Image 1 (cartoon, rainbow, N blue to C red):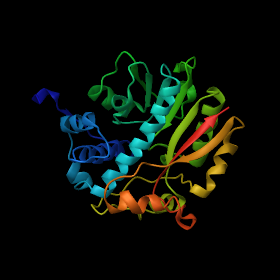
Image 2: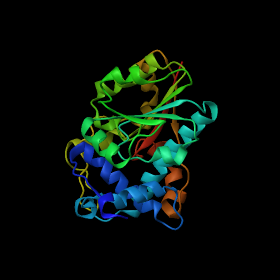
Image 3: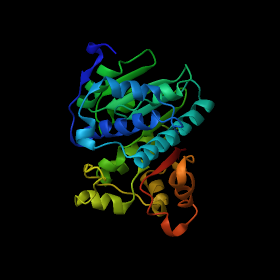
Image 4: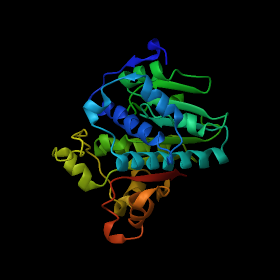
Length: 278
C-alpha cells in the first residue's frame, strides 16, 4: 500500500461508531473461517490512519462475529430484493464505512448513500462515488433525500446502526416517511432492546475493552414489533429477520436458541427488522 493511500480519520460520538464497526468487521473478515467475506473492509481498515486499538481496544471475537452476522442478515435482505428487482435502488441511510455494496452488487443496482456531511466527507474520500453509487450529504431526518430516489424499478431502504441513535419521534417519522413515499418498497433496520437503550442513556454500557458507546435513545423489544405498523397505514407487514448461524458454541448453537425461547426474546442485544409497504 502506497503511503499516499492512507487517510487520517478523526471522528467521535455517533459518527465515530462507523470506525468501531469497521474495526470489528475487518477483524472478522480476516479469520480463516470467516462468516463474512469482506475483503473491501480489510482493505479499507488498512488504509485508515486511526488509533483503532487505543480507542476501542483489541477486537472482541464474539462481538466481531456478531457484527458480521448482522451485516450478513442485511446482505441477505438486499440480495432478496435484487432477485426481484435487479435494477432497483437501494437507499443506505447512514451506512458510514459499510462495504455492503461490494458484497451484494449485481452489476445493475443503483445505490444512494445518505450521510451526515462530516461522515459523507470521510466516505467519499475513502470510497469515491461510482457510476451506480453516489453519496448524498444530508441527514436521514432531512426527508428531502426522498426526492433523490428513483422509484421506477423498486426501492429498498436500509438503516443499519442508525435508528437506535435517534429520538423515538424521529424514528416514527422516518418510518412513516418511507412508507408514504415508497409504496411497494421496504425498510430494513436493526434495533437494540429497551434494556440496552436504557443502559446507554445512563452511561452503564461499556465493552470489555473499555469502549463506551454513545447514548441510544430508541429501543425496541421483539415483543413490540407490532407497534412498528402503527407508524403509518401503509406499513403492511413487519417481521424479524434471523441472522445465519455462525461458528463456535455461542454463535453456532446458543445464539440461535434465543429465537426459540419466548422468555428471552426481549433480551437479544440486536435484532434486524423488515417492514414492507403497501
